[in-house]
Length: 118
Image: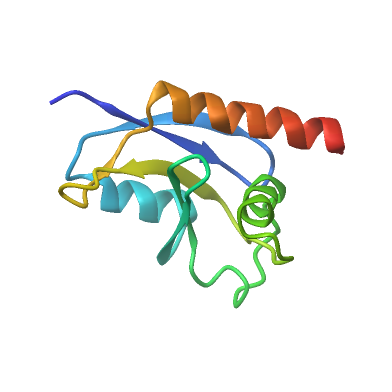
């Protein structure tokens, strides 16, 4: 089966592509966020942002990129705590799948936008 690509962004600004196979995404997501997973769909670019559901409870450090993406999408102030990982969804099956090149590019453009605002 073809490897799928997810984008991992840590609170320390490191980012990397991570490969996974369809059907084996759950452990990838849990490992990436280091805990219980929660999905926030960013409809404007068609990606799913997976985050640590208990990030605020455990007072994890703020993820500035994830917070930027959340606020850009929903227009209200809130923060995302901890590491995040971005994937997509097969809307026919509900499975977590990798990002398309267009989705990957949209994340890259958003990161560049945040860096110019900073």
